[in-house]
Length: 394
Ligand code: FAS
Ligand code: PHB
Image 1 (cartoon, protein in one colour):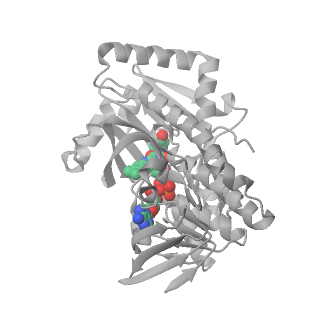
Image 2 (spheres, rainbow, N blue to C red):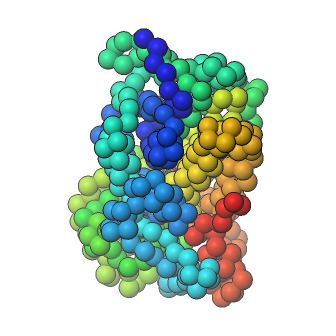
């Protein structure tokens, strides 16, 4: 049975849900087709830091209330190296900008609730989703749902289906340029109902490896330690995790760290990845479907929001103003921001992690850069303005 909509969105992660919400508020009909169940999507523990432009977009989408009520405004974070912590004053180096600590899970929950309240169609449990005829002006999706073959005709397809999605995979390889760097380590992350070790995030460069102290609320923490790519979650007991985290922190943090049972524990690989271009006729890629950053710079979710901001405006311009200027410039405008965030995320990862192949001199060069970073106003400003998010060009 063939249904029809204006924009067919593949993926109900933050990209797809935020795009759907912005389009619906502009009166543009859209359907989201998602492979997993809603609970499964909510069960993925991912990002934790929102840039102000992302928070503004959530407000524009009408889903910012709980973020403002429960999110934590952070004006700075600390770098820990050589046994001491050094604060990066974000507000002081960016004319008052800050970030909001509010988990991706909660962003997704807020977007799902708004979509459901508006009675907007989301097909969960869609199998074998595939985009077709997107090189022309009559694209459509096929998928199966409850064992029944389905077809969804649309004016446009938005591939918001993440790194392993079907939309980028459907593009002829000759039409894609892929840029990729895989890092020789992973992040072992733990979620626990414990009070944060500090009121701000701590990024630690240690001879044993990187560590990050983050949080979700005053009573829920998110910690990470750099681990081997060969590690498995079952290799790490909670006690082993807490011991390793303590060893990578300064004495004061190690002493005040409150530990507890993990409520989630997972290992994520780290890669830098960009697929160019991000538009193929009437199909657009947005978010992780088009690019991946190592999570060090907290850019993944924020880049997804950046793509959605540009795409939603371009589609509104198409339908309301009968202009395709935004659509024509979509890929170029997204990639200009994507590559700056890729650079920052690669740089911050290179500065803070232990690399097996750079030896003793690598550690000394990192220490020299960290010392320079915290002692130079210019260097701290570069760190701060990238961390809070670069301004949009319109
Ligand atoms: P998502 O991957 O979130 O969503 C894509 C959706 O499409 C999923 O729901 C998927 O089920 C669905 N889908 C996939 N294939 C499909 C198909 N064929 N048909 C239908 N649906 C399909 N970012 C940070 O800033 N900080 C972090 O700490 C951080 N940690 C991360 C840890 C992990 C393990 C991963 C994988 C990513 C992490 N990220 C982090 C990045 C992450 O937050 C992403 O940037 C964010 O989820 C991007 O959102 P989407 O583009 O919506 O992609
Ligand atoms: C998180 O809280 O999950 C988080 C925070 C900052 C990062 C990466 C992850 O840079």
